[in-house]
Image 1 (cartoon, helix red, strand yellow):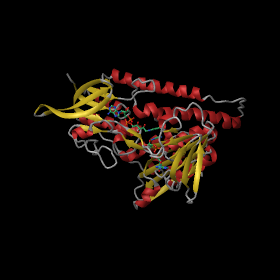
Image 2 (cartoon, protein in one colour):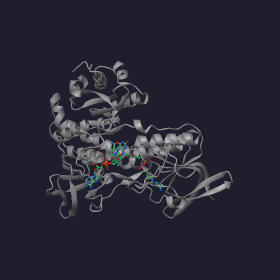
Image 3 (cartoon, protein in one colour):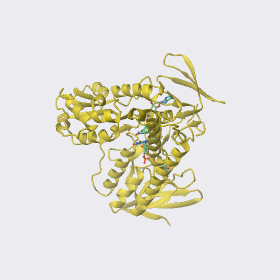
Image 4 (tube, protein in one colour):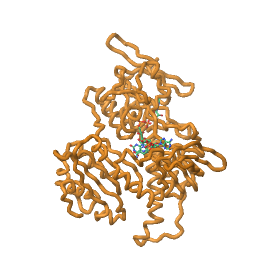
Length: 481
Ligand code: FAD
Ligand code: NAI
């Protein structure tokens, strides 16, 4: 006999498990179904983010930055280290421990909140009726030969995304790697190629570069980091090239990849010349696609758009009654915090509350060194939309805390409406801007003006003073430049 629930969540990534916890907090009887297995073949909750995404990448980025500091930056503080060496396998086990701690932690959180956790693939089977006014959805949960069915009045689909594949670059995670393989190498390859100069390419490329690889990034678009503010992207390219040591080639077209003793990438460069790149390992990071494999969308008539995303409205409602979808599998940025907030909003809508996510104030962070972060519109978007704006900018070079840290590259830029002064976008490149961006998000959520930030007291000496000065700069009254 099927078990019955108020809500069945399919997927236990940051969209799904957070939705399930919030449902349970709102007294909804909830099951969370997830099929992820770790390399040991055991169920591992947390989805892409915890297993092969946000968490392991940030753990390794931190390790690689510590190595870089010890090797190249400590000497300026008078700290001398002789015989410095790096053991990548220890870094990997530290990363694995962090991942295991968090994935196990999600299992505990679900249990604590009395969410039933089921391991296996969830497939939508059909819509049934308890009575004329009381319908339910039936889901098959398959784990190998073990098959269960569950029924639920509401469904939240949070099946996430998977790496986009290139037909000429077959990923084996031995030599040609996606994010999973790139986060599991046991030593730094001598020569590392990266196809795709997006977020993963830059984060993974920087990390392996710091650990000793010669890294070449091949990006198809003529521009660099086109989602970011152009000025930030320009500064990032300069620093990542000169200081991190990445070789970044934009405007290339790959013709083919040959694997023999080396991996040879044959491509046409931005001048139209044929080139060959020989590497030992190749990361392919050319975006991600929504994951609806095995979901049974066709069984129930769940509507997708032309790119394979599940179609949803502003409230994450699909075309089917009481069926919602959140996170990477729907429109909007593919970010963990966006997925989680959508999960919370949907749970609250199901419970009769007013769940809502403002997609215009989702912060982006790229964990390169220096970090890049932004919220709201870029300068080029404002120009294209013909919105008159004022800009204020301030460099980390002129900030006391940044100098003390020895991290003086980058700046903060505040963009505000020319007539109302309401903040339209804030863009940062510099140390710890992943933390500083929160102030910008709060400001935008509260419809702050640049003058509001300019009038708020910021601690001294702190990196946040750079945002303060950039806000003062909108009215041409920055104090320290
Ligand atoms: P996912 O995390 O992908 O989870 C989906 C879950 O559903 C998976 O466990 C999957 O196994 C399961 N599933 C799928 N289909 C079924 C089915 N039919 N039945 C049962 N289970 C199913 N984002 C950030 O915000 N910050 C970062 O720093 C960051 N770093 C990243 C680094 C890398 C290398 C990568 C690849 C991504 C990173 N992201 C980051 C993006 C982030 O991981 C995703 O946006 C986030 O995981 C999306 O959450 P989700 O819940 O929608 O999907
Ligand atoms: P991406 O969309 O950020 O970048 C992919 C890049 O590959 C683009 O610049 C694209 O032009 C390029 N490309 C596409 N086809 C190509 C080809 N044939 N040859 C060369 N270049 C090609 O995608 P990425 O880096 O795979 O990351 C996926 C997503 O995961 C991100 O968009 C983001 O949503 C999420 N993520 C978030 C992180 C964070 O928040 N810090 C970290 C890592 C991933």
